Length: 156
Image 1 (spheres, rainbow, N blue to C red):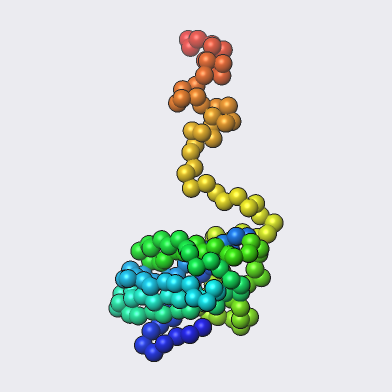
Image 2: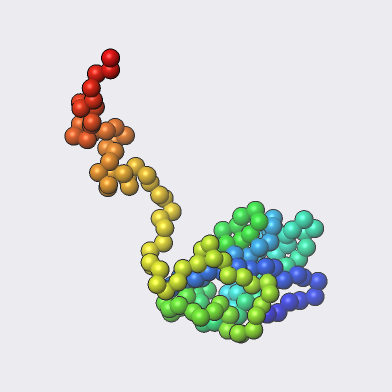
């Protein structure tokens, strides 16, 4: 973990799937982030952010090799990265070095174990499609077969 003079180390959280890493770099209002993969297994991040617009610089030397292409999403308080692993397998830890890193945390809200299903939750959840698959709603109206209105007694 390298850290240069004048730059703070950003907090990072992570989770994994069999084929990818989910990395979150916690820097609020990050300006012009520079993120790259070096030497096949090192994530390098530099950027300015936070209330004082301070400089942040972080390097993560991963447990195994990753692909140098990644998806990046910048939010107001963090940067989210999805990085593909070269080999599809579960890692026992994120970093090559076993020493505890105090700025690195496990993201249990996004974590999945080997036993968990490999299918991710769909991004475009559609309640109508789900109800149709269950035999419920058709085109927003109840079907004639499923209508129980005919069996109701008249109100007096």
